[in-house]
Image (cartoon, rainbow, N blue to C red; front, side):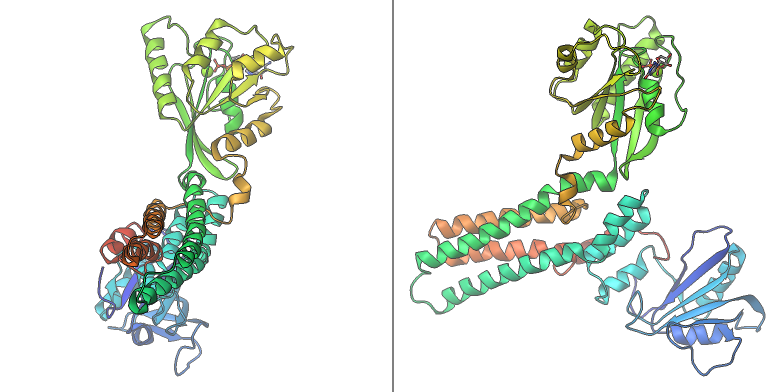
Length: 460
Ligand SMILES: Nc1nc2c(ncn2[C@@H]2O[C@H](COP(=O)(O)OP(=O)(O)O)[C@@H](O)[C@H]2O)c(=O)[nH]1
Ligand SMILES: [Mg+2]
């Protein structure tokens, strides 16, 4: 991505008509260009930083007015990018925004690449790389919860966790290096033990962060769930209940749902794609067979299966066969139609659920649907989900680097215990440190910056 000496500009609001459009500009010429294109209503010598000024946006070539708008100027380093910046708010017509951008480009600015403002913020040290990535996650989030998780990372939660860890590694490296440098003899065994203990502590902390990725990945990317069961168990009704809308056709004719119906919703702030499937039984015709094949594919693709049974009718062989087919797949059993008298004994309920949690529910009255949502989340994320909030690694790149850092720490501990020269442990520790540095962008990320920032939208 381009040169920092360029002044860049872009439309930062979505293209199309809107109440207001915001055009942003950043770079060394920002203040000068803003001065040529903006005529404040109340004359002033220079545009005060971080003040909203009302005025006319003009075409500098002929002085004709493009629009009336607001200008906010920012002086380096007190801006998003750390450079001089100007932000124009104008009426939300694409024609006006295009005219303003064209005028700015005629004066020497150029159109920004996707993510270029945020990349500059990173290159000027305003934010680290993990914070820059979190900016993108905030914009991409589809639920408030996702946005809140990303906002924590944007405010530096990951970096603040990694800081002490890196400091401790640097400290150990310094001790080992002075042992290599000055000591006639190798490091005494006792010191090696103390260092190993400290390394073990660091490794445990890394492990906790890596483990949190299981939950973090789901929070960031969402999950998929297939609703499965015998015909007429109430799958479509439960699917609609979870979506809180009438999406799938519900009838008392078994085999109504023949094709997959899938919809997006969210459970506990986590996006989920739910697929309502055809009831699984011996197919009565070719179409039903195709539908059942698709149900099986949906099961294979799902992160979690909601296994629905109708407890107002006796537990059948079909229910149990289906349950057996799901062994090894993450399931929650929904014992549906609890508003009707149950034909199932406690033992039968246990037998059907197996190792899976079971929730008694009524898609008709909505009784138990809230609990079902909670159980689904708990099954997916584990019981201690909420207590892990503090260390939630959501980004695959971060997780990979943490894993590499942990591997290198393990190697260094092995090297220390095996009595090899300190230099071996040192090489491993430096490797570990490099991987931790790559998360925040301090080391070895030059070649991936373009890849990371090109995934942003223009104007951010
Ligand atoms: N009483 C009662 N009837 C239900 C409940 N859930 C579904 N049904 C009825 O059961 C029949 C089959 O429902 P449907 O959702 O189409 O089942 P599917 O074949 O598994 O998709 C319909 O007549 C529904 O109205 C429930 O919780 N209670
Ligand atoms: Mg159905």
